[in-house]
Image (tube, rainbow, N blue to C red; front, top):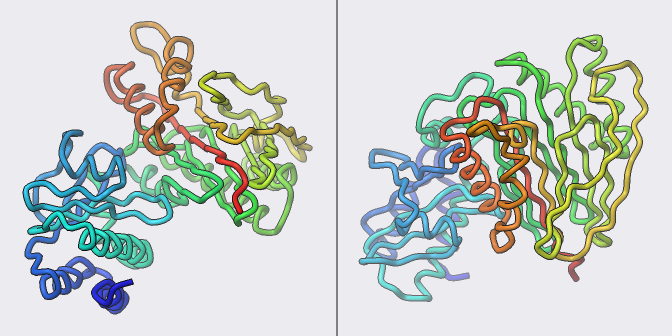
Length: 376
């Protein structure tokens, strides 16, 4: 690692939370004579790159900033450089710099600095609203604010898997959500098809999410995680409210997938270009009855398999009196083969909006998981 990159890292570590971009701009000006430094963050809908300070939003997919974001590679055009601001697969946006010569060694340094900025933004976001507030093109509903705050991120990449998810309508989502965690040997994934309206729906989803996390962090198996969350919801609502949930655990060394279907969203396998819905043992949603016993199912994945989890809001979305899940879903899933999981999720949501010719009425959640096989 070069000395300018080390200097930039030290500067970021010492900078006040709200001045990360300003401080890194000082380093870039002194080291590389770069005079324009602008952070463009992707919005909650994954459709707009928004400047941290004053400036015009970027929506056109052909813009160099979007090409940088989509392909996760540095772009230089007309003396302006665009660098991905990403960490561990979580894409936060693009760092726009000028003037930047098309010098591979310099671009490598700038790319490392942009990655360091992504890490630092992640570290400070809990203590400042500067970056969250600048990521929204309009106001979030209170329920949506609560839902986005619970998410572990929108994408994750490790050598053995790639994972991404998205909520829609992004600025007004109510009860749909997802959660994940990995420890290098296994990845856990929970996808929730929410119930109810507004803040009440988000509070129910929050209870389920934290109950599942509590059980998972205590080392309980998947069926016991479901049972604990089921009891927590039933104790509070006595069966009047419940949640359709799909729980999955993937062994990253063997490809063995463990599943608990608690009234869940649809699980779809894409293998060698063929799309097939996985047959799951339907069990009661979380919180419907007291002391429900849940059972696990097991599937064997092959290297290169892709899984999609889609909620009712996707399957039942209607355009011209036909449902998306009946006519368009499988066709579109086949087309996602070359895409990274985040691009596949974003493209599917975009296709869904085009299908209904506008914003979605019901909540929709889409999660995509690729297993790339055991790694050394």
